Image (cartoon, rainbow, N blue to C red):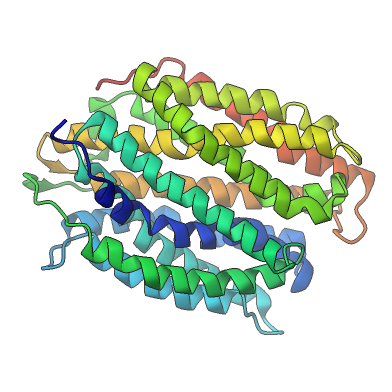
Length: 421
């Protein structure tokens, strides 16, 4: 097939996802625990600070997408944003994990906002680029799968390295080790996407703005349901990620197994990726994504009934939910790329704005997860050093009970979604 992407193109595009994932995992799993346990802020304060700092993405992500659509330079319109964001990410995250002894609340708020801004400068143009590399339905799936495969590989590295150095049980030490490796990998892999992948000239003649966004919903009426389903599904995934360390340490009482369980989870996601890709090519991306939601819900529905001594059962659940991870990571973004491709064919520059909104929805889900989870735990008087029975039950429900409800709501929103490709 003449329009089949070469392996070196897939590698050049996907490789930068490794260091981004290595930083993403500690950002969403270790950082809240680090500030709550090591720094000494209350879980309520951490939840509220991270929630409000992430809300800035509601403004910045669509704007970055819009500006990257309109930006013109001899080096392309996506690459300058990725380069700038990479260096800002390296410096701001270093500051975030080295807080002073005083005014830590302001430090967390300010530098988390900078980290999220830097992340958006890299991720929004990066995602938008995937809709422009190929116009082929299945090749866009290959791009998304490659990116998410490298993402999972980065997440696995983020788990294995602290485990190898014997610091996986310490959020503080894990953050320090992972940051060092992140720097080496980002500097080593960034040249592949900057110099190994060309930005294609396209026939887009007109840039669009926020005022025309309603027209997108008119052209593709099911887009509203898709975006809302994505938020609910992302929230269902973000709540367990945010509370994972607390659940394993305090409910299962298996603190020493946290690294191993995360390794099993992401390995299951890697193994399942080719399986989901095959099914998506055969029966459609939306249909298979909905199937993955059901699989995850069936697995997680048993978690609130587990407790001390149930490690084997939780491991089986981890494998099943890990299988659904591959579909969750690759298929929604690929569906979005299909929509962008359809709109781009009408000579309108939609990619950056739509993926900016997509990234904003992802950040909104993550913000809601931290805000909802940590604030509710604060309301029931949760103390990580002396948790009550009520607090442990609340952790279980937040970790798995509420996510199942969100997954089913997402499935319901997608039940009539039609792929017009």
